[in-house]
Amino acid sequence: MPVSTLSVRTRALMAACALGFCAPAFAGPNPTAEAQTLDILKHAIAFRSVQGPGNQTPLFAAYLKGQLVAGGFAPEDVTITPVDDTAFLVARYRGSDPKLKPLLLSGHMDVVEAKPADWERDPFTPVIENGYIYGRGATDMKFGDATLVATLVDLKRQKFTPKRDVILVLSGDEETIMKTTQMLAAKFPDAYMLLNADGGGGALSEDGKPEYFILEGAEKAYGDYQLTITNPGGHSSAPRKENAIYELSAVLTRIGQHQFTPQINEITKGYFLAAADRAEPSTAAAMRAFAADPTDKAAIATLTADPAEVGHIGTTCVATMVNGGHALNALPQRATANINCRIFPGTSFKQVEDELVRVAAEPKMQIHFIDTGTTASPASPMRKDVTDAVRAGLDVAYKGVPIVPGQASGASDSMWFRVRGVPSYGVAPIFIKDSDDFSHGLNERTQLFNIAPGVAYWKVLITRLSN
Ligand SMILES: [Zn+2]
Image (cartoon, rainbow, N blue to C red; front, top):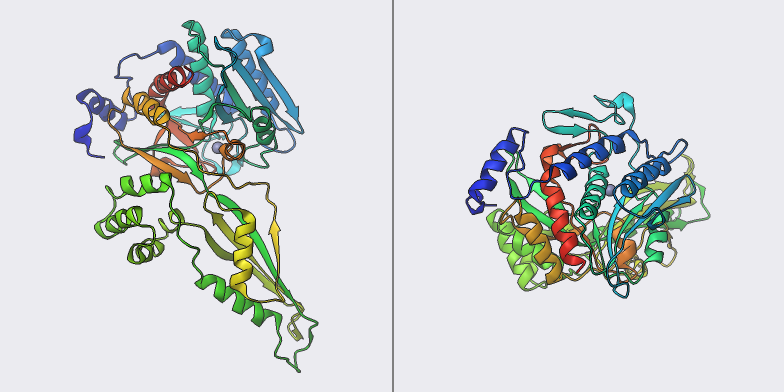
């Protein structure tokens, strides 16, 4: 973004941030809530909330319940439900009108496995260095858990009463099978909306300037399809015209040449219009042309050729694994391939399967959808009350930073709520540099300057959207 649009105060904040020591140089710093956020975050990283033996997610949930109850929640309003080796947490902040649908705040307590031997610092020991906190979950997403809990406690401290109930829903297996997420979504199918602290978020330039903020309103679905062609086989010295490997190869060539009909929705249209302001000229022109007319052939060709953009213009499918034959000197009895698809919101798994079968044009081919426990979900509408609240929340510390609608390629808890008709938005107030993004990876870290604006931001969102 053009830095000139930032206020002088924000620029001063950013200059300090670039050094890694950001003072909360905006109106309304909140030392109590900020200190509690950091304290919770340090405790949170120390819980090894990883799927499998020794999973400490239930202990982490109990710790968070302790913080909430000490902060003024009635013990019966904070429940922990054990599920297999994990658990989910529900904390209800009671509003004045129980007839109104609740506002959900969402996050997950589990983290991706981390092998201490591979890390420079122990992943389950919080380490603070040069303005960063290091540890598994520092970004994804114990930072968000800590900020939400501390903000809710702060609102209790200030005797804030929302109109509608505000319900914190923390899942316990988002990184793996999402069973707890599905249970949570089933509990609240009529929620007003869901704000997910595990999606969206801000981009920092390498010199520490906020560039834009992604407000995520949709995600593509993930689908794997196994293709199989079988054959009686035989001796390789007596080849026949029918050959499972050749037939599968021809199928894969046809699928490789196929393009799914480009699609656009309100979110990707908004994304292209905003992204065009920062793209190089030919890409920018294609983005604007596609936003105006998603059948524009030249724009489609340009965006299709760009690996960073092709996923934004529709469903993509690509061969990722292939296997065939059983001996060097035998005709293959079987050839299989995996086709991995990223499916545009509004398109079902079955529709993609039918299209793959049609394109394959091979009656002998069998197709099998591999159920990986995900779902296809519709896009949530870009509501004005949401964008206005996010604008106001960001303006506390990042005045004028552009808000870009986002459609994620990965899956988050939001999808299970979207399929039930709950509008869901990824709105995490963390600004991060590309070079610092180690979610799921080694040496995960987040800059601590995010705490103060994060608390202020959540207070704006929660107070505005619960009324
Ligand atoms: Zn996450």
